[in-house]
Image (cartoon, rainbow over all chains, first blue to last red; front, side, top):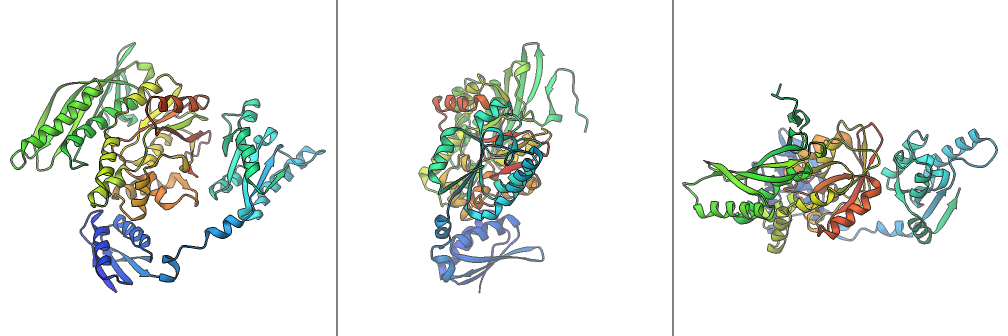
Length: 198
Length: 316
């Protein structure tokens, strides 16, 4: 285990000291001791950029980064992107704020349930588009706002039709999603593998 | 603490804005600001230009026109060659000339460490001063300079950046926000600030606090120097970026899809950064087009103001 004492140094000196120590004798295990949380974060980022696995520790008032070289997992390119690019891209387009005809209250309840259950599609759910009356699901007071926020934070792109918001005079009420136009919607349709229309 | 005040104070200390605004008559208000710091680049002439651009920026961020300036100088005259000081001041003067601002005087003290900056006075119509905390739901936010100066300067300090990159970042920091301010005057703007030491998210948080609105920031749209992302992933991040993050963490929700290096850049302290402008959504594309036509190539829409009283920033 190579020990590096980088206490008393200000950024970027701890990173430079760690870099020099690694270049000097190419160790597989390093332990870097620092006296600032920011330096600890920086040294962690540096070691990870050099292919080390890292762990953070606190030793009294000192901050420690442990680096372990792991040639099997980090030097080789991660195979992770391949499966996701193979995954289907599904676009769900909601042109209404309720499902089906007949009882409106039931229709709304079904729509809320539908949007909440959509997450079962997992990573294949690629775009969620709201047009016409569907934009009312993306404005303040919508029952599914929190669910839509969670989708967006998880990386789902939500598109909301700008012409429709304008038509209903709801441009200022929109709470979620990117205001979009027909060209974006058509392009998304062309790029995806499947469009589900509600 | 109780600050002395009177009925002509439009924006004072209690508002903590970019600059103070004081009404002189019904159609004229004074804008005052002061800023100085230690050298952020090795070249004294560049340092002078950057310090002046940075001090002037606070007047531009209020929507005003700077008119006069005074130098503030701290210099180790006994240990260091006075020609260095001359170059710093020349840099400041040349930047003031470019901004059509006159230098009326200044004050210098003997100090171990170099410090330079200016006190700047500008003018504006009292009804047109742009506060930072007056975000309007539905507005779009436009940023006029790319982020990453703090990280790139750290890499320069670490001797890991090329000379060309060091010059590129110096030029970026020395670029005046004058043209951006002039162009935005023709648009329906609700709020404006300039991005400096607290980083983009820190300054955005200042705008959001007390505004009764929230912000949805599209991180992929934010203009960023490509080199800054690379250096950030190597840990060449100034300590200030981590402080900025810690200070505002509670009001910021970051999507797990935003890469760590980009998150770091969003908190990176900027020197003389761009203007962050809140514009009527109907005019947002027009403002960006006008800025680009005016030579501000990096100007881009990055966020939208949401009518949601949680006062949160969603980074997606």
